[in-house]
Length: 153
Image (cartoon, rainbow, N blue to C red; front, side):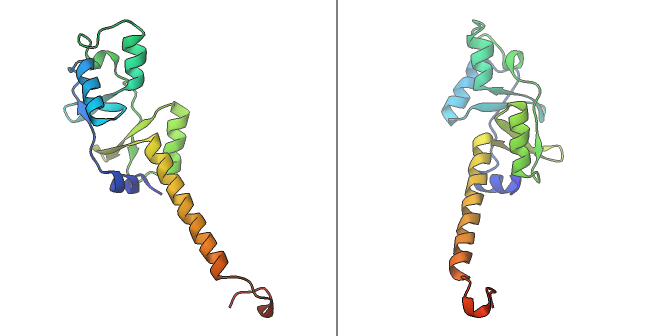
C-alpha cells in the first residue's frame, strides 16, 4: 500500500502557518481543526513543523509565553518528507526510527498532503483485514476434496 492511497481517502488538505505567526495562533489553529501539528511554510517551501510536542517541551516547560513567542523560534526544523509513491511500511519505519508522528507528502518539490502515524497504522490494519477476509473466502470456497487427490480442479 502506498502513501497516495492514504491521501486518496483522507484528502490532501494540510494546515499551514507562517514562521512569523505566534505559537498561540498555531495552537488555536490546531485546536480548531483537531490536529496535532501544523506545517510551517515560507514562500511555498517547508520551513519546519510545529507540533503539540514542541508546545509542551519548548513553551510550557521553558516558561515561555505562547502569545509572545514566534513559531519560528520553537518549530522543529528537521522535517522528514516522503514521496506520494512511498510504501506505508517504509513510512512507518521512518517515523519509528526518527520518533516523528507526521510526514509531509511531496510530489517533486510540491507539497501534496500529510500523513500521520495514525493514518499509516489504520491503513495497514485495514489492508491486513482485507487480506485475511480474502484468505478465509479462499479457504471456504476452495476446500480440498479427497477425490481429487488433494488438488483443486
